[in-house]
Length: 297
Image (cartoon, rainbow, N blue to C red; front, side, top):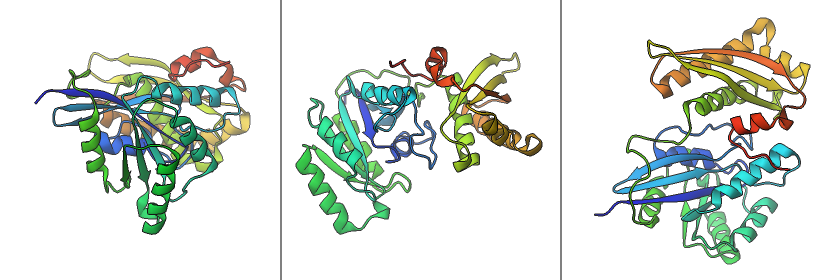
């Protein structure tokens, strides 16, 4: 049997469950997942193996109506992730149905040349008659080669989707070694893990006006990693929230991020966090490069 390898762009509206799905297909965590919409900011690739196939899953930011520079950069990254893909998987929150954003997205996708796969996610939260009606309506709006009804969170239907993607990617040599699960660098991974903890622990207290910049990532002779990061926020009031009383919140964020990073990187991690107020961090071209986004005028 010959090897197969190809790119699958995973697109959808914010909070459709794209990152959860990519993690489920890969078989381990490669993308951060939080209840907040628009968590994914840049293109990140998860690498899933199935038999002789290597499926390169491009997890993209949710596609939505952009209002600011960061939004525009995220949406550009999402559409950029769909360029040159061998097929596109549209993930739709089955419980939400066809929102305005989903409708606009389908209208744009139906003009694409790449084969389209429809993935109705979160089916455990929807009624079966509603699912069938939703699938039928979406299939009228665009031509989907296959439709899958899954729950990325529970794993229901994920194996069938993975098998289909593995069969659909073109024949060709693998692009990555068999033990690679992502194209993210350790530096990028460190920033994403800390950002995930920021969202998890602060929930609605901290708006999107925050970013993580990895200032230093050093390898020690003993094999451990020393990481210095700054948490960028827009206002002094947000800095106080991140720090918490007596610095308790930032210590908790750092401890949780350090523990997860040590597990993901397979070595001891020394993580040092501090908070910086910069009302104009979204205008920093260097930071966009750091977090993997292109500057969009």
